[in-house]
Image (cartoon, rainbow, N blue to C red; front, side, top):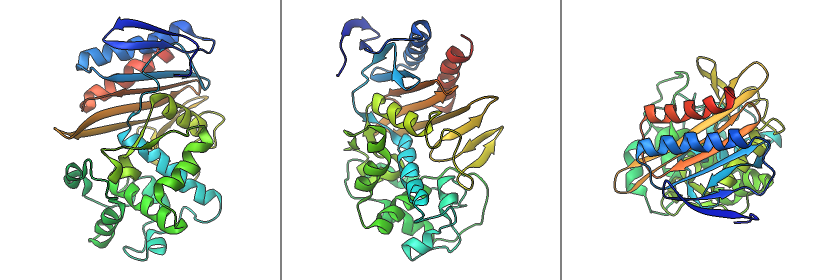
Length: 321
């Protein structure tokens, strides 16, 4: 696993490893793992992984940090960073429309709206069709884009989370560059962050731009901190036109929720697959205080109350020490 030492122990039925790097906050990093473990036990979760990073370096005990896992909607940040790279290069702007790139559909839906779930597209057709696509390698982004962009549009309605937005972005990226989405976004979003071994999920590959990436907790933590950590390109938040208010001070930017506090900005996102007998998995990634980055994964579809409880448990460890 690329570490100098590891410890096998029976602790909630999993292998525990210890990072090789010097741990600047041993009690705190251990407390984060304990908070996650207690939460996972309460939820009856058996298969889990966990990584904590401090200023970009793994610290403290970790659970299966190098085991590839389903990312679900954490995949959206990969697509978002990939799309934003086209804006940085001047190929697109926040106002570039899907119709300009794809040649069909509603004229006024922009890259900025798609990235921030403010396109007004509704309802999310993928919620009905995704169970049929599990383990089918057929790319579905074009199919979803055509369905979403050719049906009647109800007009702008503020923030409305919808997988269709990211399916459209994935198709736009592929059409604009003439290169498969997976190849393009691995090169533009993952490899610059030092993530070179990830691959699409065998189960969710057809839904890649909005939920089909698969990688280890350690690799996702590296990706997230590289782009959204305090020294990252988007560490101060997504650029103007690529960030929108959600509620109570929370914003949605490049595949990440964001919140500005007094002297730092937090970033987070949940991923969740809830398809009985087909695919049930979840993941949570968060950067807190510009210092701590945590990725936790689990093989269960949990409810919103449980996800909020996990968030609160980790936040408590960082802000009360």
